Image (tube, rainbow, N blue to C red; front, side, top):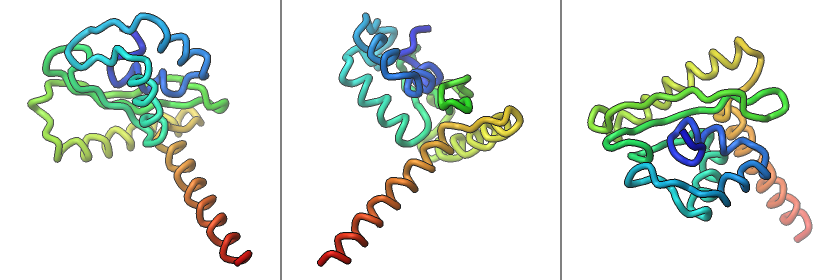
Length: 147
């Protein structure tokens, strides 16, 4: 399965070094099914979203009627070690249930990551969001002190 299609594959690609991402994005992005990302810009935007939120999704990117969600396990160096994902028929998971599925997948991923003494992409994304929020807060406080 190519790295540009499917939740688990994109979860891995999103956390690979930029040179690897560029190599994949600039190569042939084969259309596997109706929603496969075939434009480099669209793929890169999706990968940025995956890194920011910490998980990947797929809706009919690889097969008709198939939905998937995945979280990356990151090594101590921050490189992807593996992805843990769930996939199945789209009609069996409503949009309302997706949050519950993600919560379960997050708990399972953290359990595996803890056993391996590594972290998950959801944990990394959470740290980055807190860092960004703290940076904006610090910037606002600094600006207020100056004025």
